[in-house]
Length: 356
Image (cartoon, rainbow, N blue to C red; front, side, top):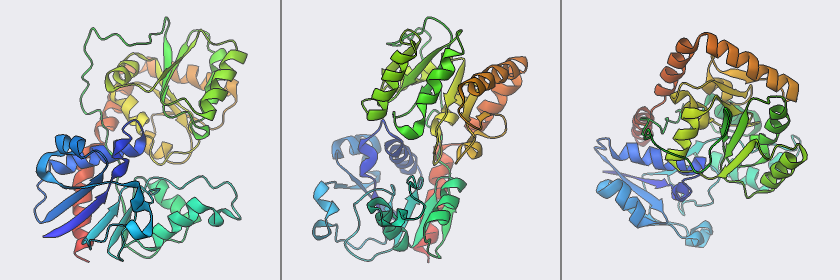
């Protein structure tokens, strides 16, 4: 029986994209008939992992010391799958190696970027790979654009939609509630999420509030709070912090539109989540977002406040005039991204690699 090691310790960060990816892939994979493959899951909280996935997997406890060569895992697995491209956990031995690429790190200096520590580490992971999987065509093309990709089997497997069923109780009351129609966005407050562009835009949309959710104790979070004060919008912008699934579903369900002006996305999962609720999505026309949003999303080509506000108003008018059509299209698109399909594609990929 083949043994596959899943380097998945980022599952501990369930409020972040890597954690969600790890969790949902492992969850759906555990529900499939795994036949002649035995998986070992690498994680910090083994009690949590066992309660979620049961005896489907073997488990190996994560220790930070394993980042250092002398303390690396020495067992010779038939395949090592690095689920997250940024991890410093590597196998001790030269064994078959699968790398999943979510996105290329931001290239600040196009002439000297290969000398940066994170880019050196990424190139090393690419170079040792027996096969490479990507979560979008954009993730694949940008990797080929900036790095030396070995001639190995490559796969593009989209992430699934974690909201496969709306479970929001009718009488649910969120911790933070808007007193007028609102726009909604979610994500960690980092420069690349570009939430700061929404603030001057909102000033030109007096009929709407804005709700922003996600980790915000960041430098960018402080900048955004300062900008809100400068623009006099403290009463119209609600910053909730990290939220659970019920609050997230509430804000998707009740928003007028989902807004996501991100500068760089390997996939852009919140776009699909919003479409689950039939909501119009306004997103950046760059990186993976057009690939994921499809032809019926509304796009910003740049971030001038007047232009962004006009795009919102024009898009909402288009959506309202054909609301039933758009809701149907959005929901069907969201339903096409399932973690079950994703897990089946990964299982097929493992079998192909093991047969090499």
